[in-house]
Image 1 (cartoon, rainbow, N blue to C red):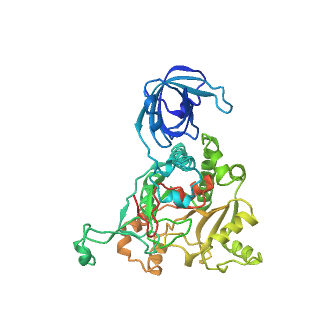
Image 2: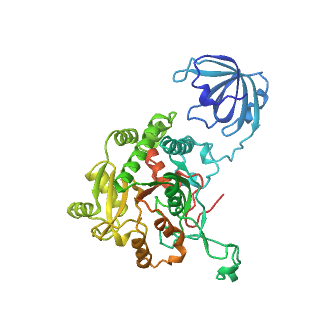
Image 3: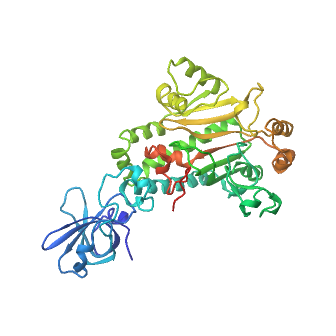
Length: 453
């Protein structure tokens, strides 16, 4: 059975029977033998292969260049070389797939911009291999966090007729040809359907039956934005909790972020080292700081006052009643509080219909969790559980009540206070890896003008 290199490098005893396979990173030849650095993608480290001339398969050694795939059988022995505990003495080596001279990763030092153009090959680099192993670990940690706390995993629909955010920036799903696109009754569902922007509304239905639930899946937004934080397809983690208020919602969001950061620190198999070396030298220090200290909390009103009094000139104006921009969020977390910060109680005019109205009749129980280097990473609220107030919100937001009858029924039949949030998975990955662009933490980025592979 083939052994994974991540396990081989952690062995405590040598073995006379070892079978590995992977891709050649480098090869050095002499008259009597060759050294090959082999990586199978399971960890950052390579396994050094010592292949003596004359072993089975050595006649193909010249074809085993960078990028070629090989299979090796032999012994694992202690290595005399500094910096590595083991090396493999090959008994046989087999070329599985050649990589000719036009292999794009022959040389090191490619820019992230170039590597985005070969997204099908970039996972073979050290940096992107580490990114996507971290993505896998963080996905596992998300499920572990909620399962350990008795949350039930719910699969909410990707195709929906509801616009959760009310922004209208949705991808339409249709089977109609262009000349019949306006004829909704003849479409597949008999009405307009879209790719979801959030699983929240459907998630609320299950929270109002099962108490604690979460969704974790792809969401879509047809926003023509080319910023480093936005993509047309991205993944969201969305818990919904019955019998919960805004305070409990903020507690859960902060606990989740801390948990994921600690998971990245504890279970990275060395991948953090490459982010520290090539992306952000202060990454580990920042993650340890976030994991070990309480977050700040401040109302939107007080946050605006701080920004106005800062004396700093921002590209976007600071004014009560306007959304905070990334530069404002980063100033709060990086320059003023110097730690993650949760801003809560936003003006009702700038938030969606489902957020609970506060007693002041001016603000809603919204909260955004901001982190250094990125800004908003979590957005949530206590949901409006009062039927009469919700129906009034439909009018204020120009929503057709008949399209949300099912949602109103949750308030009509056994309504309870409940709350939830959405954590942008890619933004969380940007935070724990230090990568500065969302395109570099998702396997195949979907952005305006880009839908390759």
